[in-house]
Amino acid sequence: MLPLPPPQLFDAIFRRHGHYCPMSTLGGRMGFAARRRLGAGALRGEFLIRTCAVDGIVEATGCCEEEGTLVVRDTGRHALILRAAKEGEAVRVVLRPATLDMAWEYRLMDEALQQERNQLAARDLERRLRDKDAFLEVLLQRLRTLPEDELLEIGCLPVSSA
Image (cartoon, rainbow, N blue to C red; front, side):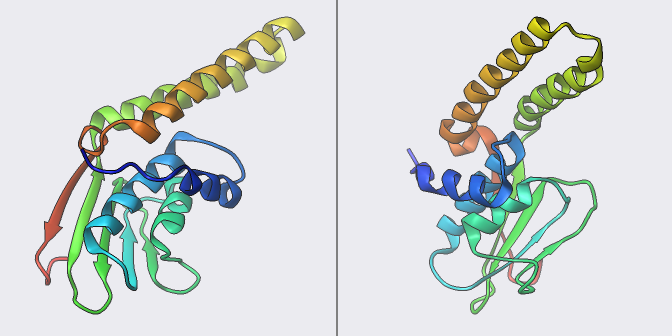
């Protein structure tokens, strides 16, 4: 079984992102998987959608938009292309549909709560917030610990493709 990202990675993502969420966690998993395949050294990346996953990718890969080592394009695909800066080796990491479904379930729960918030009695709001937090805690644990191949599709790219 492949090694899981260390808990410190998720702590760093939290510090960068400001809260725990499924997409930043998944960005960390994507970046960790890609970096592990490419090894140490400078990397250049491209992520094909602007979501919270970018913060996880930054922490896991060391690539950064401000430094020009990460380009984020908003093409609607949860795909990371990471290239070793010197050798040109590249890997492509894509979130599996079932993985996106897990993250989407939390987002729908959160959106429903936000829409209904003003109509809820205080105790009902507190209960819904607790339920949402409990759901998120379980979901994040799954996203941090499920085997990589259950969450991600990973493939090497020819040198000229990325």
